[in-house]
Length: 380
Image 1 (tube, one colour):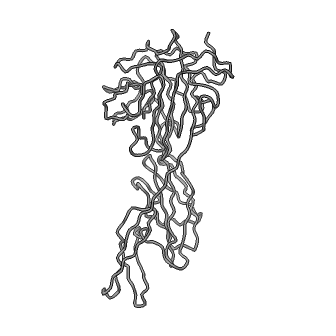
Image 2: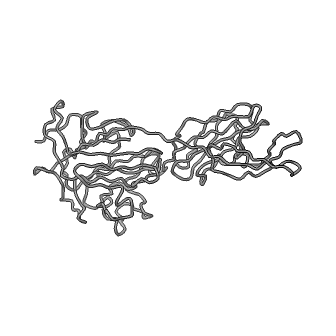
Image 3: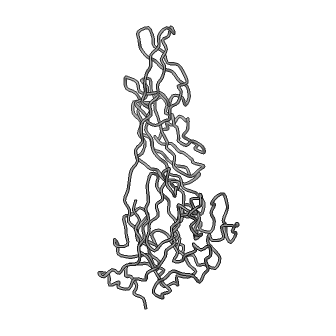
């Protein structure tokens, strides 16, 4: 009888986490200011920290006393820079704000110096209602915003009074899918490469996404990692434990776990051959000679990795090895690039289908065993 790890779930993975931050750079654009007589010209540089360069729509003039004045209409006011006096200011939450598609999302606003108007912009702006171009001032100091699409949206507000604006403020909003019942994703339905995988329907080439004849262990992150929430700093040694197929046979099964990546974060999933942990009286690790690991929009994506593929779901988001690592992030240039706030599935299997075939009787357990495990860390 194999020795069970005392701190391990029936199928448990333990991971470790580190964080990183990103920085937003300022953009600068220039406005040509013409005199009221049209005889003189001068150039004014304005720091625009939240928007791409945008041509000013309106009028910029210098009066007979040499004073600069600017007028604008509608959303073009968001392109104006600072002015003297006591300009209006606005502060938004630190963020990120997390919400779901089509849900009314409250964005708190704190304003000073009695703004006459506050203008909102969003990058991207498609599908955003209740914010873009609107007068955001409300009696409660909050705005109610809806997002038709998933992903990360950078919301910016800029407020103005007779003395202008003291500068804009921004907050990121991470919008997750509203399907599957609130924040609970549905493992039996997904869209990948434009193909819908639902129930037992499998288009050609997608037969090994939740393949027939295999048992799916659909675990939450907290269930799988001994109560640790997504983002907690954990590894197979802290707390002590490891991924294991538990009492189930390794053949004909896989574990799949949903998660939502955070914008600007690089995740590195590492796994090792199972090791004994003497201070937990765990002396007989059940090694696997090869572990299949994948990240995918679909639960149970056990398709083999294709080294020559240009499709990241078949190459960059998969790895097969007894000891290795798999990196994924929301950043451009990642070999496995994900969208912040969307649901993805981490799938782990003790089998090797790289020869193009995979049957429910195959497994990669060493030493003549039919049960095996590997140790995991997650760094970010």
